Each structure stands twice: as structure tokens, then as C-alpha cells.
Image 1 (cartoon, rainbow, N blue to C red):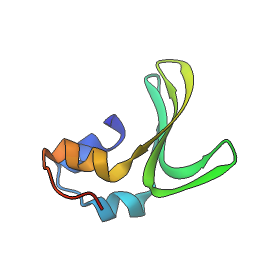
Image 2: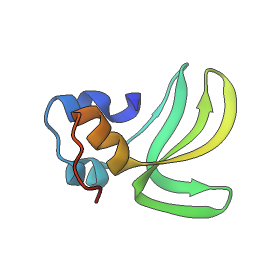
Image 3: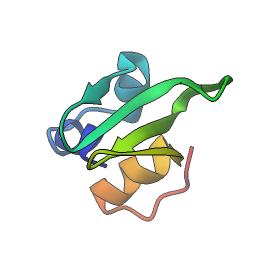
Image 4: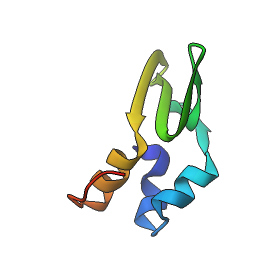
Length: 78
């Protein structure tokens, strides 16, 4: 969630997040919007998390679910 939280809070749209295909690799986590995980390609509607607090992981989350959770809305997911 930290990957996109500041962008959602400043008013970026879901589409702009998808278009940006951003990623982050820092001490706390390694994550990106879209990409490959274990040979499987994920589109820009997914957030791929490879590491949390120094531990490797393989998690995939819905970008739109996280986007609307941050916004606090109960809208239909795209």
C-alpha cells in the first residue's frame, strides 16, 4: 500500500498509476505495479510484492482494491 498511498492521497487517478508502472526497492519493501513474478506476467492492474522487511515473498494484490481502500470509497472495483 505504501507504494501508491502518497500518489492516491495527492489526487492521482487509478489510470495514471497504471500508466506510470512505478516500483520501489527500499529497506522496508520491494514492490512494483505490473511485471513478472515466477515467470508469470502481471498487468498494471496488479501490485507485485517481492520482499517485506528483508524477507522474500511472492504476493500479488489488486491495484484498484488498494486504490479505493486508500480513498476510503466503497465503489465498484475496475
